[in-house]
Image 1 (cartoon, rainbow, N blue to C red):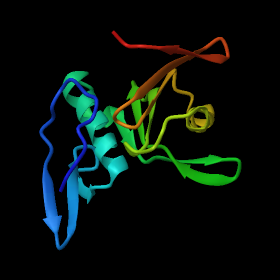
Image 2: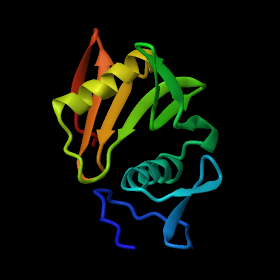
Image 3: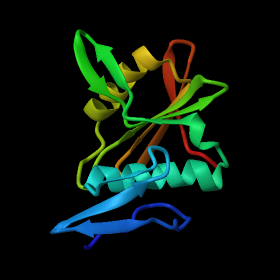
Length: 143
C-alpha cells in the first residue's frame, strides 16, 4: 500500500487493516474501519489534526453529514463545531484532484446550507483557507 505523503507538519498514528486485497483505515470519529480511498486518506489527516493538534473533542467533529442542496442530497466531508455550532467546513479531495475555482464554489455552496464561519478546501497537498464575513469569502494563510 503506497500512500502519498501529505502536506502536514505533524505525523499521525493511523491504524490500518487489510481484508483480502482492500485496505481500511480506522476513523476515530465513527469508531470503525473505513475503506482507504485517496479522499479518505486526506480526511483522516484532518480528523487527526483537529483531535490531536487542535485538541477538539471527538464529539465536535462531524463526518459525512447529509445536506440537501437544490433538491439533491449531498454529503459534507468534515465539519468542526464549537458548542454544537458549525465553525469550520472541510471539503476533502483526493491528492490528484486539482483545487480550482469550481471546487471552491462547490464548498461555498455546501457552506450556504451549513453556515460555518470558515472553510478549508484541501487535497492534502494544497490547502485553501477562507473566512466568511460581510457576505463574502476572505482567503488567508494560517500562522
